[in-house]
Every structure is written in structure tokens, then in C-alpha cells.
Amino acid sequence: MKYDKLSQKKKALDRYRPLSSALVQNLEHWFNVELTYTSNAIEGNTLTRRETAVVIEKGLTIGGKSLKEHLEACNHAHAIDFVRSLVKKKPAQVSAHNVLMIHDLILKGIDDENAGHYRSVPVRISGSTVILPNPRKVPDLMDDFFSWLRSRPKLHPVDLAGEAHYRLVSIHPFVDGNGRTARLLMNLLLMMQGYPPAIIRKRDRLAYLGALENAQLGGAKDSYEKIIAAAADRSLDLYLNAAKGKSAAGDIDQDNLMKIGELAEATGQTVPTIRYWTKEGLLEVAEVTPSGYQLYARDMVQRCDRIKQLKAERWTLAEIRKRIGS
Image (cartoon, rainbow, N blue to C red; front, side, top):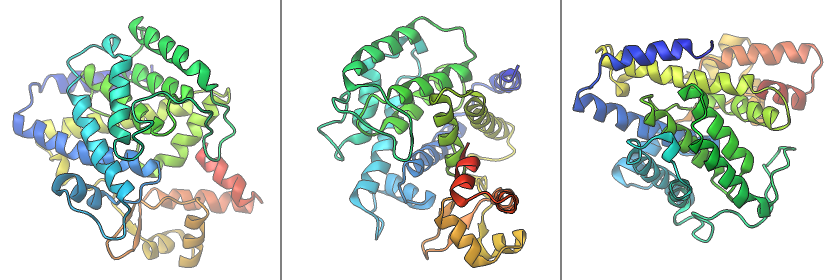
């Protein structure tokens, strides 16, 4: 089974519990920044990881960034605090009030009219052909969703969390903030069952959104489930390494980033080509330095090789973008 490895790692982690309060605090601190940075970045927020940390830890503003982006960072951090206050409950006890509170915190000061309320208007996912439910159906669909959770479905904890995320974004009960709310709900369900929160990395954005869309259009969920399982696996490894004293979360070089010239040299492409592929959405920027330099994760080397192969097969850039994201 695809979750056996995760179960084994969870049992190994349990043998180290209870973790020291200092270690727990360090891990939670790192995850708070990383979850906020990545979840907002998936939705288009341009704050870097370092900038996100400055905003939520020191309350400082970043020059050139919008008020909305600052609020998104602060709000998400507050929503994580609320989620952590619920972890002693059971998944079957998660209520509509809990989810509405998460959403309210996400949109506080950004869209107070819709914060914490189901949508009453039709919505579309930008760039997607997925048809979302009529707003009149949303209350009943959400009632069905919580009835499903209360039924205690016999799923692996990671499968349950991923399925809850998938069902919530497919209902799309809110005007905005659906993805962030769904990812926080997913992590609430994971933490309730003793798992660390799972992080969907910025570099995985295209694959993650493409896998969701494919499933929502009637395709298989395999790719989506693999992305969620991989995210949970990375977090288990991080917790296990910290518990063994190998490293603390804050010491981990999460991205092992490359400058644009280094990526170009490693792939045999020109810097203008890398810039163009980035502009066209074929490559993901992992972080932007305070000086404005774009940095890339090392797995973009394989992405470049794949783009080159597809171009040789005469795929258009639009076709390549869709294929890479699926």
C-alpha cells in the first residue's frame, strides 16, 4: 500500500515522543513560516520566505509589497494558531463553525463581507475549465461534507486529510480563500492524528493544481494523492531528523537554490531562454532575493530537460505548460 511507508515513519516518530518543549517550539516556528509562505505563494502572493518571516514574526512591512500581501501573511499565521488550538479534537468533531472560523481569519481585513461566509455567487477557477457547484447548492454540499467527516471514513490519516482537502476545494464554498482554507483543514486533520503538517511547496504549484484539476474533471486522483503523500513524507522526515538530533528545522536548507546563470549553465540553455520559460510559466521561481534576483530549486534542471524534450517533439509552449502541470 502507498501509505505503508508513512505509517512506519509515524510509528518511528511516536517512539521519540514526547519531544522536548524546545524542539516542539522550534519545529512549530519553522512550520508556521513555511506553511504561510508556501500556501500564500501558491495563490500568487509575492512575499519571499524571508519576507514572510519578517512580517509575521516582527510585524514589519516590506517595501514594494501591497497591504493585501502583508495581511495574507499575518492572517494565515493567526489561522495556523487557531488550527493548533483544535488538534486535541477528533477528525469527526470538525464542525462547520471551525472551517468558517479558519476562513474568517484568512480573509480578515481583506474581504470582511465574505470572510467566514459561504458564497452566494457563482465562481470560476482562473484558467480552469472545472465547473463549480451552483451557490444555492453550497450549504447542502457542506452539510454533506461534514456528515462524511462524522461518518469516520476508514481511510489512512494522510488519505483522509487529502480527501477532505479535495472535497472542500471541489465544493469551493467561498468567494476567495478556498485553497488556503482547504490546506489548513488538511493539516488540522493530519495533526489531530499525530502527523506533522504537510507542505505543498511553491515549486510543486503547477503539478498540484494540475492534479487537482485533472481529478475534478473526472480523471484519476493518483497524481494528486502522490503529491499529498510526498508532502506528508517530507514533513515526517523533517520531524524524525530533528528528533534524532540530526538537524533542527531552522537549520535545513529547504530549497538548495540556484541562480539563473547556474541553472542556465547546468541545462545548457541561455539566460534569456530561462527568463522566457519562467515568464511563460514553464519554470517556477523558488525565491526572489531582496535585490530582485530570481532563485530556482535544483529540480528545475530536470524541468528544463523535459521542456527541451517536448519542444523537440514539436509541442507548443501552451501544451508543454499544461503537460508539465498535470
